[in-house]
Image (cartoon, rainbow, N blue to C red):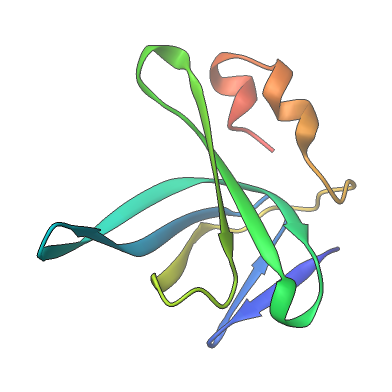
Length: 104
């Protein structure tokens, strides 16, 4: 199973994660939370990135990618561990709708 480590948190493909990232708007900063399924880990070392997919309003899929060592990342929480995913990239979730799209 493909995994990565952010601070002390182990993340694996298929986990449901909450990514807390810092957003700067003008002179104000705030923490934005993005919750979804981890569908991709890519790269090595400094270039490692991860992609999280969620189902947004109107059943539209939203994907967001961050570098694992980005300064804007505050923390990554693992909400639900996966039972056992047999794929390294979960791109097939893009074609699914409803509950199927968030169950791994």
